[in-house]
Length: 568
Image (cartoon, rainbow, N blue to C red; front, side):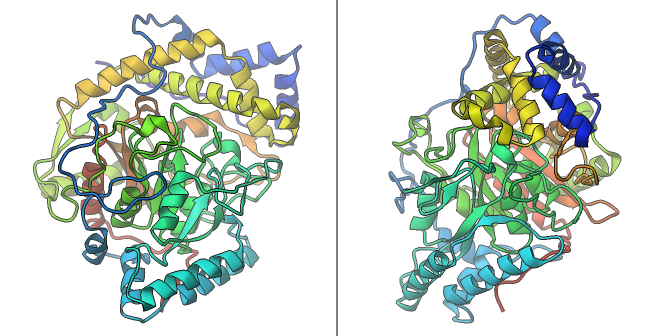
């Protein structure tokens, strides 16, 4: 079957030209013409002309086998959830890969156990590192809200537990950042805007579960405004600096989460992924990002942005860190009915099973639709995975172009609906966000229903692909971290071609709900990180984590240009 993905060709706009274009896009008189041309360039005409006979799937169609019998259960967060295996032993047995060593959960747990450091000292260093990084030139801007007294109180409580020999687990006393899309008690939730300032009186479920595990929550991490693009640009809180490439985008929308981890402010951060918002910044910042199966992790307490494609999950320094955070975050939650009926989360085979015999499915034409450095680096890592016993199998996935447009229709439609209550404040949003919302307003109910029909078709195609493979492998992004042009600040830019390249391998797993992970594959000649993505079967995050951990032993990781150390 032929590969049909199109390269989007739309002129880039910035500065005054962007401002004029947005005003025309928002005007009743000129909007239909302006937006109509954009939608045509983005492939909507072909989408509307496609013959679709499938019924619509308003959410991903996933098997719901219920809670697996015989699984070990330990630890209850908000509402209770199942953890599998001994997370403490997983932390203690974490492997060390070659090259630069990020400080990991295992390092903090060991330092506390051996009394070479303690949570209070680490918290003080984290606070100093955050402040110092924001005083630097350029300022890091990973975090947008930090309450030092609250951080210190959490750290002192963790230190008391460690002194008494009763830590809550490997995450007890470990610094963790929280994307500003999630409620965290005592902090405002802005979703990256300057006008949303509702102070949370309770934690989102994922935040509560990490707090219950003893994590020292160091504050709210920056994000792309309302999560509506993948560069990480934010004119209100400042665009976070990519630690591997100052002057380049960090990726978004979970920009601050990835930057905080890559810069050494914490080994784990809470993030969310509606269209690559975990995996894109993880790839561009050289860390690990796991998008779990849709509804595997509760969305309760998150600012509502894109219900049917949103996936909370971790960004982490290592695959083992991502696994531990995922295990604590995942599981059913009565506050989010979508999470009910899922099988128990597991980390089967992590650290023991390896990848011998694992089938890596590659759709060659899709895989190679990226910059040469990206393709070559990812192919080199796959060859090394084959040396460990993995087996490459060719496959095809039909109608990727339809799925690309369907995902765009879905996420934009849901975001414009989410922001409708704030319609009178839209002019306080940045120009690129206003343009995206103007585009979304021109989409129709018929477009949205058709997108859900395409979702049904894609889910069937993914099910067919997984009859022949265990994971689907692609580059994470089509290019390395892009430069931030001088004309971008302070108004931003509209660059649909760039957005398309960053999302080229991302969208199927959001529309279908399959789990996916990005992990470092290597670096280009300028030292910029390149990510490899694996997409797995529903509920089989453990397989993805096994591949990511195997890859860590093969990739010589490099130090970022901006980095802090919190341990001696």
